[in-house]
Length: 264
Image (tube, rainbow, N blue to C red; front, side, top):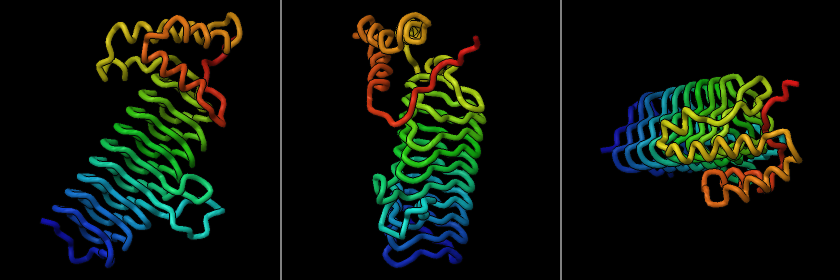
């Protein structure tokens, strides 16, 4: 049974699924859809043209679907789509898209967004993503499945982060991060592979071994980067995880690639 606290404001037109719980002082806009089993603890705001999937938990002072923080936004109808079973903690913000971008911000399912984390306009966020406290993602960013962003990490607009990557706390990511990579630093550099995450997610020893071999070849000192990339694609053509890195690098991108630090 859906329950709405008497202090909450649910505007006419809002669509609430079965067994939704709306706590004290929450505000639900007229163009909002909440999936079955969603729970808004208290003081949360969901507005704009926003769809929230089933069984999401939204904690106090979070705001979903607010206008994009973009000087070109003039109040056009843009939206936010949030997947299912996300845990959205206190003071989290997910902004709507822009007409100059995709027109919609898309958040996957089964994620955890810790206190104060932020997703800007027109982003595409995968499933099982974790943003630790105060991590911030700029506009037009694409983040793959199972990515972890440490506390106070910041991702520059238009960047891409591949699946299973790990971003260390207080890292400023200004370049694309390969799938399975682990990056650290005030201006983040590629530290290696996210070996802890790969083991936790059940990747086989063989897959991890191939990824490590491919990593060493790809970022060796000999030859040009393009030559090394072609060598990796040839040697590991039958290893799906390695070819995911190759295809990620070869895909079009507006940003350079995050690489290991040159200590020379």
